[in-house]
Image 1 (cartoon, one colour):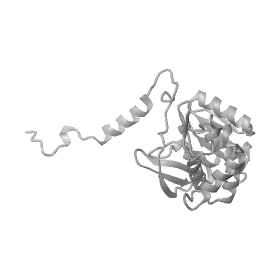
Image 2 (cartoon, rainbow, N blue to C red; image 1 turned 180 degrees about the horizontal axis):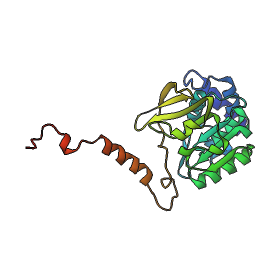
Image 3 (cartoon, rainbow, N blue to C red; image 1 turned 90 degrees about the vertical axis):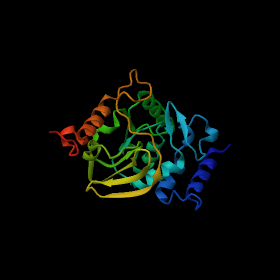
Image 4 (cartoon, helix red, strand yellow; image 1 turned 180 degrees about the vertical axis):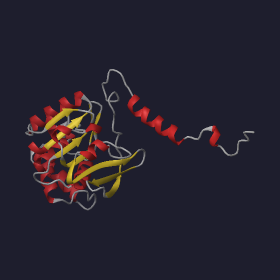
Length: 243
């Protein structure tokens, strides 16, 4: 089994008109260079266009990675942040595009961070920084970023991430809850919409796989506050005869 041939076939399949998810030449070269089998447990299916599971996280299919990075439009020298490092494959492709010293990745699950670090080192991208963080808070120590990719769904991008965008920067994320679309947000506030996608939601601390105690307090406090602010108290109901 020649893995280099399988990798070439994968890229050809993504560029073919039947899928047409990969049009950028530089991105095609990057995906053709990264040994995806180092990031997937079973190398026999590493180059198949399908998702995988690892340590409770989703390993994105090659076509999904291509769609994300086409929208991100990262180029050589761009300082880049990946929120939701997963097993590290997307970060590796970005390392080919922008240089591994320019790629930073965070994930809220510590076992996943260890997995990503090991995979990247083995694949030859040990210069990529992977840290265990709440992705919604970004990585302010290394900000600003020219490109931010969020591999988790949100109704709106967290303000902390927008604040970490450089002038002329671009943030890409899956927008929505049940129904999602890929959206790019520029530092000036302009947006660009892409096709439908399906991602797990952006987690807060305590919701990650392997957490000792699942704690939704931070999210629920915000949800309850919004609900209370929009509710109508009895004295506001005009149909009630108070006298």
